[in-house]
Length: 448
Image 1 (cartoon, rainbow, N blue to C red):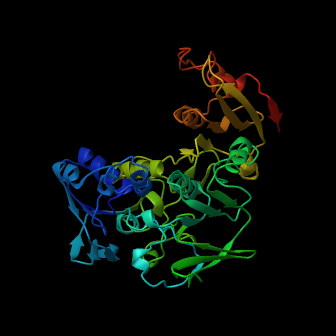
Image 2 (cartoon, rainbow, N blue to C red):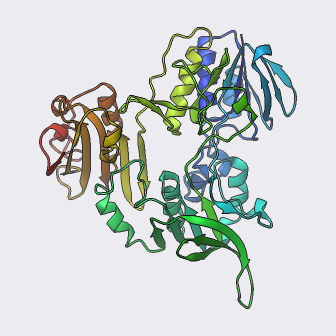
């Protein structure tokens, strides 16, 4: 069996590695448009904050590892056309035939409505850093700038803001919604975090603010320099650099005419991740996936979903046997000294849930002899008490607990069952009752 995989990021690589385990005699080839395998989308920030010494190290796998596994990797090559009836594709370098084709070429992070002028020297001042070439060029620019504007206060935008403030930059964040991270947290739950942001030196957050245009201009000073003019409906902000950190999405391309697609350009797949064309599968940021808490499909461009969808597709290449279950939108991050984690349904999404939900919010000491607390909010079915969503917030690292919460939702655990969940006790590291035990033991406030 000859397997072609388009894309060498999380979904494509996970698919290739699992396929090698399942089909030891198959010929597996990954085709990647960039010159680097496995670059992490936040790799640029890892480099700036000293987590990796070189930008080239901000990868989750190296080409040599794939080659050792018997997986051919062709870099600097882009998919141009696909002919499913002939089981053939054309790239920027040559033609290939395949028995199975996996589309895993990911998403872009560009606004559909924002007007951005064609800047002089734009290749030296990219406004996104999701791919390695942009990150590499930008690494030489960041040390020279003092002011940075970020458009979009989602996870990526806030992580960038946190890193740039840490570097001593003046950061302006623009968000169209009422508050940052709205996809993952209820606004009232974030109150301690949002209050602390007002005290962060070097950060200014503009919510309920849409950016209409980005222009290039010259400062009126003794030594004029080129800056970016960010225009909103109410103000104009000058910045040395502008990042567009809006929601990622698949890019419209000619392949959308070959495969059945949704209006957001995601490719339609069946339960086994096969597209409308036989023997062609789509994974990662290219598809909508089942949202377990809502029992419907939605777009969740997260790395954990990309990995699992890639592995699930590999299981179905020879024979379609494994249904892809989907995901819960599980995230965890550290921002401005706070740890934030979320999984499943928010209270703000109650209108999407077929039943009636209730919530509980409370706080608990992180450890027995500690003044640090963990804030928690649980969303659950009012009738069955089945857990539907959990949000965590703390100054201490509580991120790992969100994985247990996600498993509880996936396995349909109730509040009462979690109260009986066995956790170890060690006063140096834990409270007497774990934060998740308390989900079923009452709360500071009940809301319906």
